[in-house]
Image (cartoon, rainbow, N blue to C red; front, top):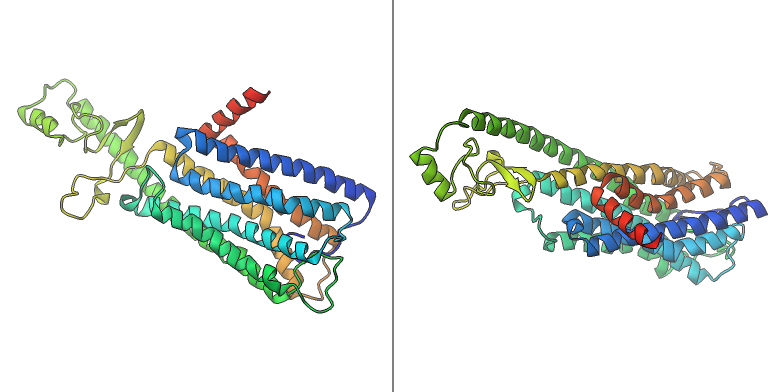
Length: 365
């Protein structure tokens, strides 16, 4: 089914039972994992970051998929691909399926936009709390996702000679349109933004290493020299350069320690406006690690959903192409499996998520 034209999957008691067992396990895994993601960001202070609010939006899309779409899809698979419920419910299912799949990739795009801004325009980025721009980004993903899916619920599927025993998208032009809007346009945009983000992050890393080398060298040179009168005065005014061993952490110098996290500021990213001459853009180790998790999330999404959309659009554009029902069923299941992967990825690659999950599991196990 997915948001494609789904013919009946292979019939048989074995297939039906396997679909039922796989479906129930997948629903439980998606609900449990993504529920923990939402709970962890809501309760753990260390996880209340701007990036993680986007991750919560992505988790909500996966949760809704497990609660609103998968049960009916599993029921249909258990019935051998025959739709025995009303066409109105089928249209609602197709709408939710298209919308939530689209919301997932739009949320990934929103994350890429947010991270690109954080790296390329850091002085205008609020790292402490979610701001209006980020709220607009998250809201826009859901509005656009509904806009892509809404034609189905507004009657697009009500075509003459519709077969009520199949729940599928009936309009081939809409299939092409939704595939392009939901996948084939967002994916290249997202990849370009991530390339720009990592180029910027690479520059940050190079500048950080160069500045740290300069700090260590300067500190070693002055290690045994008492502070001069000028240095004491600079320290009092908060203007001492990090090359002096007497620079205090947290002052607007070139480097320092803040809450145990070493931060480095970069002269080429100073505010150009008068009065902001000493304000520098900073990025910490936790944020750099969080950015490196995102390509894994995007890679998993592309691995799971690319086969589905290729089959999906091929069925609409090539009427003479014969795609076996087994292939359609397999790529649809693979797409749904992606909703269970993200919490696993966060657990493997993010220590804060891992610690929270371990703490919750320890309580119940």
